[in-house]
Image 1 (cartoon, rainbow, N blue to C red):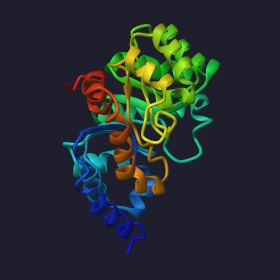
Image 2: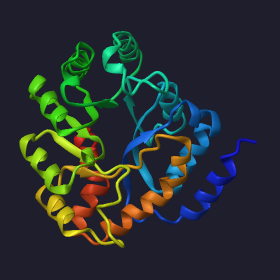
Image 3: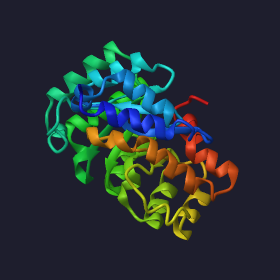
Image 4: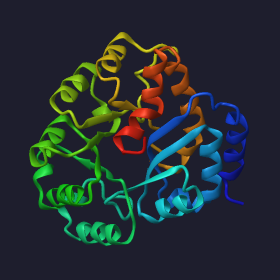
Length: 267
């Protein structure tokens, strides 16, 4: 028996009633090692039990995304990563065969985004990344970038009309995130793999100021980058609902699901 199945079953039972506020999880991966351990039908049950109504899903390779999309077409919003296997995070932007892979899948399947991909600073200027930006323009796709602020600026320099989701809000401080959001009207920020937006269930003043200045730009995400991260999908949804409940209702709903829907044209 696959070792994660009992854990998944327990998590489903624990979170089956935690569905008061819908959640659009804007940062989900279902990559090859997770696929091998937990079948897509169990992953779909876990997402439903956590009250995740929609999820922006990508995987390495793309097989996981397609299998989960087949199992839960009402939940999965597919994105295309440029990674075919683990270990390509720091090399993909210098590997022209990545473009063959991406273009082949774009011709075969429908996606709403390219990414999540890792790109920093001047790496945006590499031919592979520039082709990714061109493909985003050609196919009208969101770019989901795990990057620093310099890379965000350079993406918009290359394609001013781009739509970009900044993974983890760059792991920057709230004031720094606000500065970048002010520069780019088509930039959104996910809060995946962060916990500093909540202190004992309360949103700190610096994050509250960011959310109030940009009520339509932030969204939640779990980031299931490794199989064990699937343990936290329900827990993360409950964590998000707790701190969101301290915000005004409209703002909480925006961050929980509406901003992601609008960003992707699903509202």
